[in-house]
Amino acid sequence: MRLDILVNNAAITADSIETITPEAFDRLIAVNAKAPLFIIQRALPLVNDGGRIINLSTVATRIAVPEQPYAMSKAAIEVLSRSLAQLVGGRGITVNAVAPGPTVTDMNPWMLDNPAVQQVVGSGNAIPRAGQPADVAEVVAFLAGEAGR
Image (cartoon, rainbow, N blue to C red; front, side, top):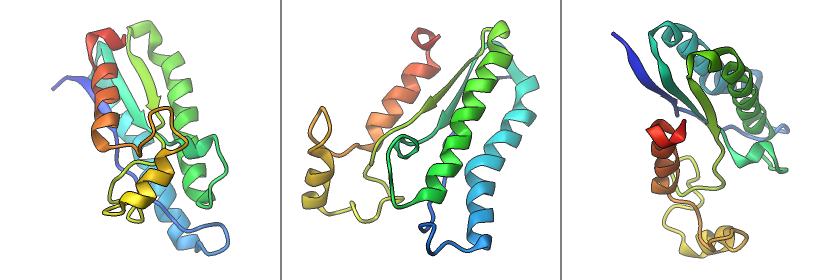
């Protein structure tokens, strides 16, 4: 089996630094940082030259957020992505980290079915609305395609 595209999308969120437990932090790191690392390790020999690796991060790595442990776990993905790009670039494999802002998903239940909150969240965006899953999917699709090389 060979791979053309690998997308690491799975993630969980966690409490703030004031309330997170060591067990919850271990699970957070396991899902958000450790799993992508070892998935990539396992998949790398199968990725075709010219393939794509796309990791999902978050804008929370660049701004102050109450979910500091979550931002920490995603910062690890960004470091991994930059370093991995250097490692596999000679094979024509591109590595990107997509870092969306607040997006209306189950991971942000405070935004679901709440148009007023979505409007407030979106008011600071260039396009004044909250992010939608399709917005992120379109960026990932672009990076996975030939034009994303």
